[in-house]
Image 1 (tube, rainbow, N blue to C red):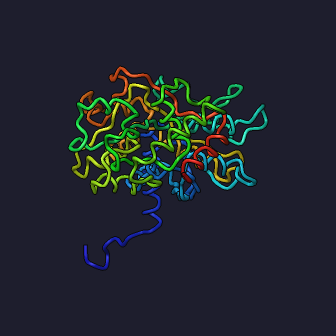
Image 2 (cartoon, one colour; image 1 turned 30 degrees about the vertical axis):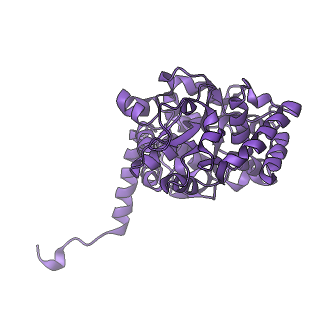
Image 3 (cartoon, rainbow, N blue to C red; image 1 turned 180 degrees about the vertical axis):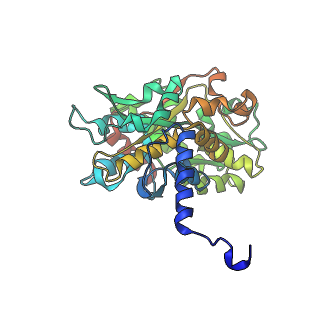
Length: 370
């Protein structure tokens, strides 16, 4: 064959092959190959740690859908945006803590839902959600409105070279309030997390119900203990930097922060507070009037796949609710990542939305101003 007869790149053929590969990806991820999505870009309000750059090619390959993430600030901000005027059509995909969005997202009665009922035929991987998290599937009258796709916990991250693992404080939330490590502690600037943990440290068994005088007492405790902290963080990178630099030795933190610091070679662990470990699941939902709802549902299906779930753990240390993903790790690997919470012999407490959240915010604002 001479040079003039060589086959030249054919853009149309390349697109055809690409779509065939995408269809194969759909089959691998549990979606029938007959269900094919047209190339589309969806708008999402989702913590980027649950869809990092490393995982986005999996979504594109399987669904021919690209996800544009809007800036994510907090779980309550997601709910506020969903409930705001026009909020049900602004995004195609949203995600936040399950128990924070369940009530506001469903509304008081059938017909009030701010979330769209999901077409479960497009999300076959939902069948593989771990049994322990099936209670977190948001349903009403036989319809599914939200699916837990990841889980985690809040605890204290501490530097084992500065805070000995044998110190009894490492088994309590009191570690970030005690005088012993004054000036080397960091809190999160967040009413929900800090009041919840302070209440647990003080012995409250059901902090989510705190209001009135009991809540004010927790506020007074936080104001008194504030003298012991070096700073309060607001962003992931800021928190990791505080520990990495040695500026702080213990802080309120996320399981993914432990992983990030250990990848950098820092000797850190998370504690197992005897008062209760704060656990949560992260729910994926489609707003009621989402313009590209079906594409968003296909993306949720990928997020619930075993392959995506394993890669999510490897990349961010946020564990997937996929039973297949969990089964792909050995018991030793699970423990090394600090995900063996069932082996710790401590109570678990849901990181739920407080009954009197407005009072919590008011109390926290007083603490911040003190």
